[in-house]
Every structure is written in structure tokens, then in C-alpha cells.
Image 1 (cartoon, each protein chain N blue to C red):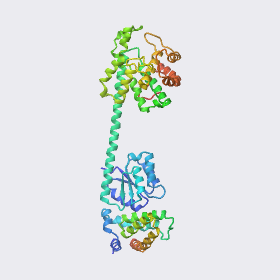
Image 2 (image 1 turned 120 degrees about the vertical axis):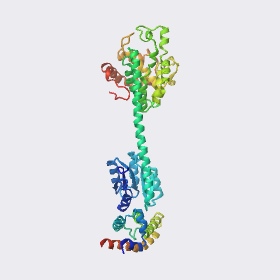
Image 3 (image 1 turned 180 degrees about the vertical axis):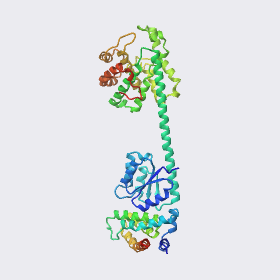
Image 4 (image 1 turned 90 degrees about the vertical axis):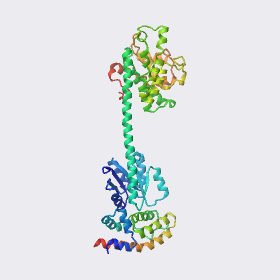
Amino acid sequence: MTLTEELGTLGVDVEGALKRLNGNAALYERLLGTFPKTLREHYVDPDFDGNDYGTTTEMAHAIKGTSGNLSITPVYEAYTKIVNLLRGGQPEEARQVLKEVLPVQEEILACIERHMQQ
Amino acid sequence: MNKVRTLLIVDDIDINRAILADIFEDEYGILEASDGREALDALEKNPDIAAVLLDLLMPGMNGLDVLAEMNKNKKIERIPVFLITAADSEEMLMEGYHLGAVDIISKPFMRYFLKHRISNVIELYAHRNDLEMIVAEQVEQLNQMNQAMVETLANVIEFRDGESGEHVKRICGLTRILMNQVSSMFPEYRMPKEEIEKIVMASILHDVGKISIPDRVLNKPGRLTAEEFEIMKQHPVKGCEMLQNIPAVMDRGIYDYSYDICRHHHERWDGRGYPDGLVGDDITIWAQVVSLADVYDALTAKRVYKDAFSHEKAVQMIFGGECGAFNPRVLKAFEAVADRVREKKWMSHQLQKNESLPGRTEG
């Protein structure tokens, strides 16, 4: 399977992303290739401080925007919830959503990185 | 057509910048900045930036800081700014709008709508900026026409009344010095510099009515008879009648000042002037100032019926009440600038050709 086919099976809205990029598949793949780096730079640690999570909110916000633009829907939807919960003063609920999405996120990252190495 | 225009994309995440660049690079030059500081540098170095797509949340200097700076340097008036947002807090977006952002770009981006919304606003701004430039050019042309016309009229007066010579030019200089002094000394008479320059321009026409006074009276070497003086006293009203025929071709502001100064520069603070017998501050401050300037210049200039008095003698006569009654505050302002006026007087006699008219640089 190609990268985009495999990402499709992981819930990524490839069609929506390509529409955003005017059908430019090469650009999409290039941007997907930089997504792991963006995620690492904005990594949201599930052990974040429940009393002081301003930076955590900003990191989650960045992942939300970027994953939305690349139509990585499972990550986008989870981080949308996380940001809303953090802004709503519900850090523990946000932590729960984060813990649930991390394996999905890892799977998508692994898929991208595997294809990028090929 | 828009290729020469440039979009500045400001986002700390390179993927977001790359997607926006891809959307717009066919139509615009693209500049990218990854934080607020870089954005401000780019704005400073690239005057042709047509719009800014600005992320709000960035490390270091954020989007709101950029907007605040663009308000300070007034770039926000010329360059539309779009806020890039993934549903940021309502307060931040409101603050962004308050600081002059024109619209919001939501993530995930919707290519088609985004492209059209931004292009439409850029076109509107470009059109507005062009119009402002055209209007500014036309205003400048009008000002030049006004100045030429007023100067022509002044020359006509001088030609007709050979005695006056450089009188109107000296009146301009005195009016400028005195108006600025009155305006800075007394809050009740404070006026913007641009208005003062209009008054200076208008002062040129204070004696335009003298054109209608017969030679035998206007250029009589000796003292005027009572009957002749009555004829001479008609020149303010005659001047206004002349000005009434030209308002459409004059700047409205200059016309209004000219009319008022022409009619009231022989009024007196005590109400014993002419033609309307106005008292005190019923006489506008600009007419009062030109009146004093006119008296001072008449005293210190040589006329067919008298020699020139020295500056000191003229000042003494004015403060002694020998030449009319003036507003005490205008006299205070005159006292404060008397030394400068004396220098100006010397300059005007020595270097009459260089005397400045309104709109030209005063020496």
C-alpha cells in the first residue's frame, strides 16, 4: 500500500487534504513527512501538571491546527477535545482523551516514518 | 496581474505556512515568517506587502503583539491582516479585531473560500490605497492652483497700489509669527498648524478691495479729506464683494478666512473700527492678528504721505494706543515676538525678493 492508502485505513481524510492542496499529492506527502517533527516539537506529555497547563494548551492547540490542515482526522478530533477541555478547566478529562489518542497518534507517525524511510 | 504583490504568511508551524503558500503562490509573491519579530522585520523591509496572514499563538512575540506594533507604525491602515486561527479563545479574536484585523482564517483551511476572501480584500485595499493617492495628488494640485491664484491677485493689488510694494508679503510673515505665538500662548486661540498656514495665505488678500478705490484717493500723497477717507473705508466691503465672485475656484477654508480678514481687518477691539463696528472677540482672532500686522507694517514702511518709523517707535505707538485698540492678549503675543519681528523687518527690507509666501519655506 502507498502512504496515503495506508493512512486512509487509519482514519486520515486523504481526499479532504488533497482538495485543500488542489490535488497536489507530492506536496501532501512532503508535508506529511514533516508532521512527525512537528509533533515531536509540540509533544504533549500525558503527565502534564494539572495545576499549570498553559504551555500544554498551546502545544495541543498547535497539533490541533496542523493535524486539521493535513486532515489527520483522529488526531485533529482528539486534540480539539483536549484544547476545549483544558480551556474549560478540565485537565483530568483532557489527560484521559490524550492517553486514548496517543496510541493512534503513534501508529500514524510510525506509518509515515516507515514510508519516508523507503 | 497580482504577481507583483506579496503575501506575508506568519505562523510558527512550517506545515501551515507551506499549505497557505501553496494556495496563494500562483497569484502572489510569498514571504514567510515563523514568529512576530520576523514578521515585523519583513514588513519593514518589504513595502509592497499586500496582506498579512497572521497566526495568533506563536512563541515569543505573538500575533496580537504584531498587530499592536502595526497600529503604532500605522501599517494597519494600509495592509489588511487576517488572523489564522484554530478556534482560539474568543477574547483573543476580539482583541485581534479591536487591533484592526479584517477577518479570520479558520484551520483547517478551506482553499476555495480562503483564496477568494483574501483576494477580494486585497483588491479592495489596493483600490482604496490608489484612490487615497489620487485624492492626495489632486488636493496638492488644487493647493498649487489656489496659491497661484492668490499670488496673482496679490500682484494685481501691488501693481495698482505702488506704495504697498512688498507689503502683502510682509503681512504674510508677520501673520505667521503672530498667529503661531497667539496659538501657543492662549489655549482659547489654539489652532492647528495647517489652519494657521491657510490664514497666512488668506492674509494676502486683506487689501484686495483697494483695487476699487480711485487713484486720486488711493495714491494721494497728502492727508485724506473726510470725504476721501469715507471712500477709502469702503475697501473692506468692496473686497468682500470681489471675493464673493470667486468662492468656487478657491479652497473653501482659505476663502472663508480671506473673506473674514478682508472685511474685518479694520475693526477695533473697542468697537470703533469699520465696517461693522464689531467689539472684542466678536472679531475673529485671525482678523485681529492681520489687523495688528497691517498697522505695524504701515508704521514701519515708507508711504507717499509719511516716512518710515523705526521698529521701536512703531511698537511704542501701538502699545501707547496711538494706532488703534487691540486685544490685550494679541498685544502680549506681539510683545513676546517683537525681537523676531524686528529681525524679520530688517530681513524684509534687505532681502525682499526672498520673503516667503505661504506654502513656501519660511527662512
